[in-house]
Length: 89
Image (cartoon, rainbow, N blue to C red; front, side):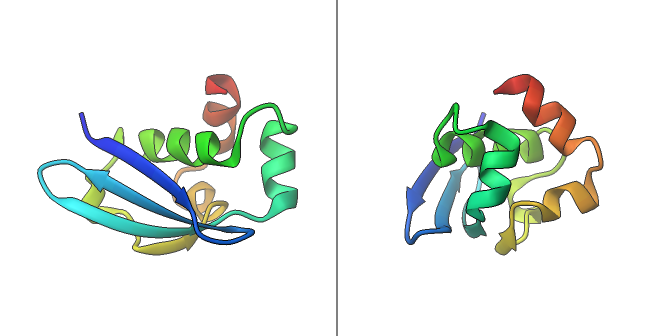
């Protein structure tokens, strides 16, 4: 299982390092309103992003994950994203 590290870089910007067979680094933007919509503030933004990467890694390798993206983009590729995340938080 890959190790996921989430580091806050700015108000809405996070760096995610995924250590697996290959180590990858990703820049993720998480708007405050989208964060509130998904979590209601019940978990940290870092936890939301970590769970989102767990979701992605169940579907593709870390080398296939975009190097930079806004978190809602996951739902364009995987329509079940938001429902799945809500159940996991």
